[in-house]
Each structure stands twice: as C-alpha cells, then as structure tokens.
Image (cartoon, rainbow, N blue to C red; front, side, top):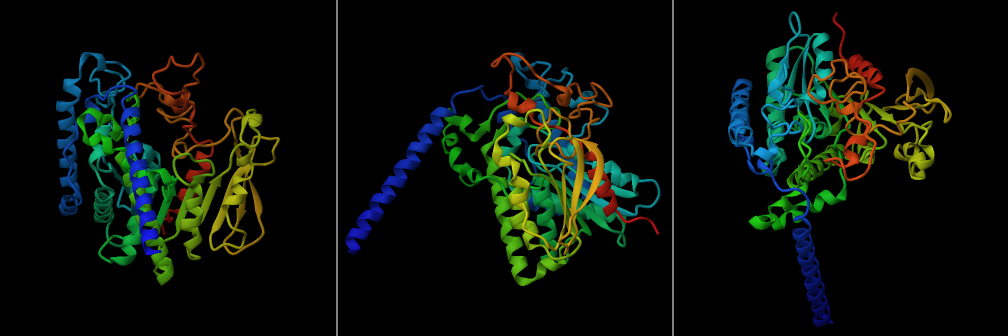
Length: 485
C-alpha cells in the first residue's frame, strides 16, 4: 500500500512539474508578442531600500529623490532613440506631457503648509503605478483646514515603470514610516495625525496603523481614510512570480511584464511588470494575516476609526475583501464604509451583466453592524438622482438622505481609479478647470472609430476616471477633521 501511494505521489509530482514546464514555455512564447521593450522598461533607478530609508530624515529622502530623477533624465530622457521622440511619450523632453513643462511635477514628494501653526498633520499615499498627483486634492483640503500635508512618492514610482521590477513592499512601508515621522515633526507633538491611502496606498496606510498597534515607537494615526484600498486582489497575483520565470533568460526579458503600453500619462505608469502584482499580493497577504491576528488577541481595538470609500464594481481590488477581511473584524470605534453602487438608470442597462444588479446587497452582512454603512445609489431605478442609504452603527433601520448629485446617464459605474478625482480635474476630469494644464485631458476622451487604430486598447480609455460624488466624499473626509476650539 505504501509503495502504491508513493508511486502515485511520484506520478502527481511529475505531472505537476510537466504542467509547470508547459506553462513556462507557453508564457515565454506568448511574451514575445506585442511592442518591444524601451529604455523606460530596462533602466532601473538605484533607489534606497527599507534599511536605508529607515535611517533617512525627510530632507535626506528628498535628496535621494532628486538624485533618482537626475539619473532618469541622463539615462532615459536624454538617450531616447528617434522613434521614441513623440508627443505622446512622457519621456520625450520636448513633448507636451513631459513633466518638466509643468508648474509642479506631481511625480515627486511634496509638503503643503497651512497658514499659521498647524492644527494637525496628514500623510497621503498614492497607489501602485501611480504618483502623488492622485491625492493632491485631498491634501489641499487638509491644508485649507490647517493641517500640514505630506504627500509621499512611494519608492519605485513617478520615474520609470522599470523601477517596479526591482522593489519590494517593505521599501514602501519604510517610506510610509518616514512620512509619518515627518508629519509628526512638522505638526507638533500634541495635535492629531491622519493618514490617507489610495489603492495600494490604502494597504500601506492600514499596515502602518496595524504595525503601530504593535510598536509604540511608530506614529499612530488618529484617523484612517482609505480610498479604493487594496485589502485583497485577484488570486492570479499569488502565482504572478511564475509568469516572470522566462525573463531570467535575456531573450525572454518581456516575460517580466504583464503589459507593455505607451507611456502617455504624465503621472502614472501604463506598463505593468509582474513584480508589481507579486508585491501587491505579498502586501495584502501580510495585511490580512495581521488583521486576523489582532482580531483574535483583541489588539484591533486600538486601531483608529476607519473611513473607507469603495466602488462596488472594481476591476483592480477586491471589494468583498474590504468587507470580509477588514470591516468584519473592526470594533465599534466609529468606523464608516461608503459604497458607490452601479448606475441603475444608465442608458446602457440592457448591456450590463445581471450579476451586478445585486452585488451591493450581497457584499455586506445584515444589520446591525459595528460600523456605519453608507450606500450611494440611485433614488430609484428610473432616475439618475442619487441618495445615500445610511445605516448607523448598531442600528437596523435605514434612513435615506438625498445627495443632490446625479449619475451621468452614459456612465454605468464608477471604477477603481475614479474616486479621488473631481469632474474638473485637469488630467482625469470630464470638464477640466485648467484645459491642457498637463498636455493631455484623459477624462474628456470619448473615442469612436474602428478597432486597431489607437495605440492603446479602448478599455484604457473607457474606464471612468472621475467621481460624480466627489463633493460628498470630500465633505465626509472634512467631517473627520477636528474643528478648532
């Protein structure tokens, strides 16, 4: 019997090895299609690692940042081949979307200082492939409320996509610790500190707060504001590292990339390496493990109140994980979850998959809950007027609050990337307040024509890029900021 079992185990092992080898071969062959790698895919800037970042102060971090951007200018911008000197390439020095032409390069870390003595401090953490640009409006809100706002450029971001091929999430966490120290130093010892995280930045913000529960030397935030937080992602990311194995051979270097797309966005990478997915998965796994551990031992009661904004339709992160992995473990500490439903009065209704009709109802547990739930949705299925369906913590009764905002009829849902941007955002908004401020207006594009003509997939242009409920979101964030006494 034992010999029989060992024989079958051996066969299963050989079968698994054969399947893995076949996957690697198919991946290697498949990776050879598509556009070639460019300088911004192969030049990896020399960024400090977690151990070095923990030894830096803010000025030291900014000095390293300047050195890195100088390296990219020398090794990429000034060495572009002729075919890459195009107006749609952010790395073309004379192109309209090269950040050197802008009044402010939002790829870099920044500090917004209020008038008078700070009443508090806030750290803002952008998402994966993103840049500090994405939370600049939230930073301005805090600055106007008397907070000093520290906008961090997370390591491996804002420069070239290749930087993400050689980074680990521990580097990002170290930079978060540094930014929190700087916010405390600038704000002073006796005022509140908040942390705001978008997408992957939401995971970093939550991870820092959980670490601060364990380590009193870390700056504990008084409030957590999460926008489309990356609490969980798809199962594919668990095995993403396997997809890059062929890249160990120079002939198959493109296997290190999940997508190679022209870089037409001045403040976000379009190309995405396998390592980006792998590090996000590692971060979310560490995050969920820590949440469960703190829930078991009761230390999660030390976590500050959490305010989260999340679209029920999200291709990038798991909305369900926000509920089941985070909110299901939170104590009754004043936390709030704001969910943005799909548009039930869109003219595209007949083309939508029926499974999304009930997704909001299936996401959340039955009331009562130890946190406040706000569902932003249509007043009814026939109108684009919207309401907030509010259930208070510990309550079972729902109250309906008109929002005074409408869902655009041609829009069927929000998206992962839309939430932090108003309609008037110069880059992502549908009605830019400052036309051509950044050389391109991605939110105004309504592409129509034949397939195969554009340099990118229509999926990249059709994704909702601004938030019709931005004003309500900002009002809810402002309500978390303590008023002066």
